[in-house]
Image 1 (cartoon, rainbow, N blue to C red):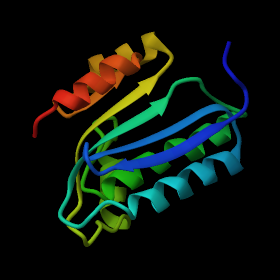
Image 2 (cartoon, one colour; image 1 turned 180 degrees about the vertical axis):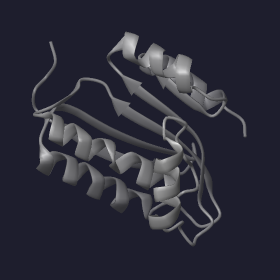
Image 3 (cartoon, rainbow, N blue to C red; image 1 turned 30 degrees about the vertical axis):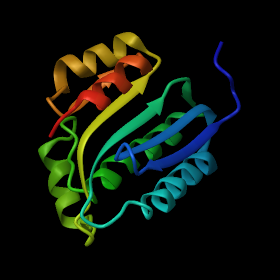
Length: 154
């Protein structure tokens, strides 16, 4: 059973060079705005000239309506693009729009790998099969995701 109350956090781990974020539970617009603000605030802790790995934990994530989901779905590509990473799920038009609107951070901070974790095993397998890359994974098991990030070498 999915816990309906939202869980939202983001954390920078300097030792592991890992940025992680979590959004779960039944979320609405304000929850998504809080999540985005937490990511932006926490990302300010990443030091200049850093290459980092990124863990997105969406296990047990549900949206109150499709408009909330669409709103949330637009945040991650922009956030990642500001660190020089473009998700493979993006269309050429999406990438062009990001290139025209997103400002790359001026601290030489670069995301080198990402793993997205979600509770829907079939959905994540389909995403992995279609869009998975050497540095971009879609998984349903947190232990597997953490192991992959730990062993990933750029």
